Image (cartoon, rainbow, N blue to C red):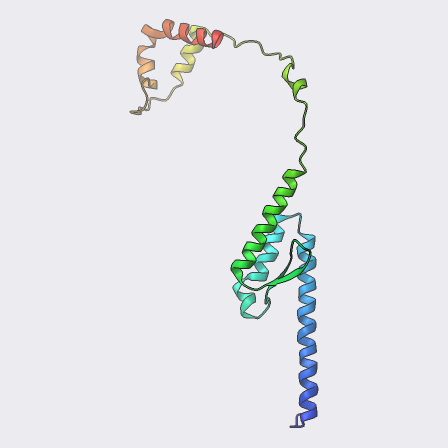
Length: 174
């Protein structure tokens, strides 16, 4: 089959070029479809884009560039990685701006202002409850603490009533 016939050589180059072009077209269609399918799923979208721009795929001449639609609806081929990243950045920023512009901000919140609440005040505590809380405190000491657990526990017999009074006033009046 192999010979040095120029006609055979030309036929081979034409067929080879047809196969290479067909592969490029099919790969482009595949990724365009995959990107379109994943446009609402950022995780899968980035996974697809990563596979397009990975070093391994570039070494195999897998992707020569990415086509983007411009604001005037024309298609441009972007080859440089920095420019590709910039195009995706613009795409996502524009998408966010579009989402924000579609959010309805005229909301009537007055119905939520006068909602009756079943909560009216905090329940006051007694000396026994405060004693249980103090006894459950850690004995750890930190230079940033003015009153630590160990100090409160050791002085509770003397200052417990005063501390209870301050806590209950705070609970009642804020």
